[in-house]
Image (cartoon, one colour):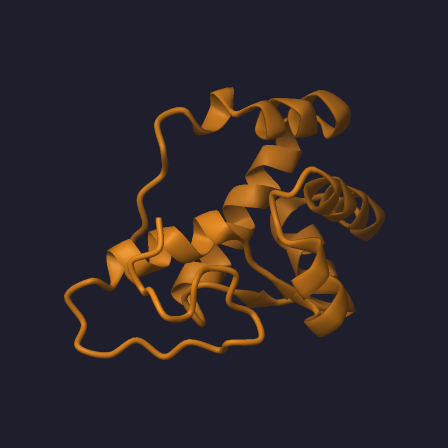
Length: 127
């Protein structure tokens, strides 16, 4: 995707506010970083490992330990799905997937990796 919508209430979302309260403003930047990497890459998920953590730390001018802590905070607050991350090393969420579907609604066909998919596989318009 070339762009993605961001809800105007994103910064007022309780999960985001708690993340910021616990880890500081850079944690919100990390969430946006993951969104951008996911949407520009595979579309609705981001494969994540230690190398990605190091790259994110460099890009965001933070330590790898900080990035790992923020990621754990994101998983604990369900900003990203913990089950998919634990099983596949992939960052995604139902919200990311819904925005992806909305951004691709003019496409004839959308490839979906069912093991990462959190929405109803039989209903591509799942809201």
